[in-house]
Image (cartoon, rainbow, N blue to C red; front, side):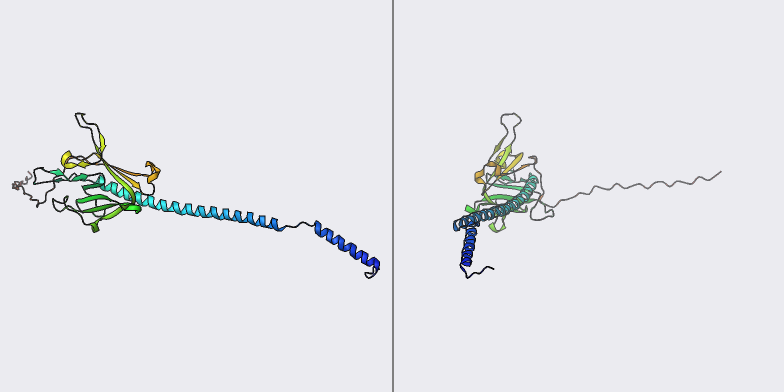
Length: 269
């Protein structure tokens, strides 16, 4: 039997201790440097992973915001196009030497005309005087202000609408351009072209088409692909005479009807 207190026992204990120390030295283990390198690599992996998730969420939110903004601009552009296409060649009778003229005034950043479509009321309200005006807004972008009212007097083109009655249609714009198409004349001395202004008093007619270009503020540096163009064809230049006074109807005389001669019954023979 092995006796640990004897000389042989001490030798055996020493031999076993050396064997355990040898196996401990041979067992795999991580040093402090290896642990630090592993934690550093793991931290970079987590940082990249969270950065990718954050970038994806930011791109999704930006896409939803751009989609909502584009949807609003699309609906507003459709309404403006419908109102412009409903333009009425309305003639204003003037007492001045310039004579009668069409109610239409087009400039590079504003437009005035008479339309049969109102954006404020759904029900037909007769003829309405409409004006579009671009107003600069600084770093936040400019606005397109829309104003309309019913045509009740003949001097409505000269009135200045109050600011509180103007309604913003588009916002966040860098610039707006109104262009008017002048057709080629019958003698072919003038080519068809787009012009920046149109005065119905001088032209004596309406342009055949109107082009409205909207340049957003945020996408101004990306080129012409980011612009929104509203193209509308206008009716003929013939005007409609609108009477302001009461309409009198003259009844035509009624021709008396001669009663028919009664038919005598024929007696059987």
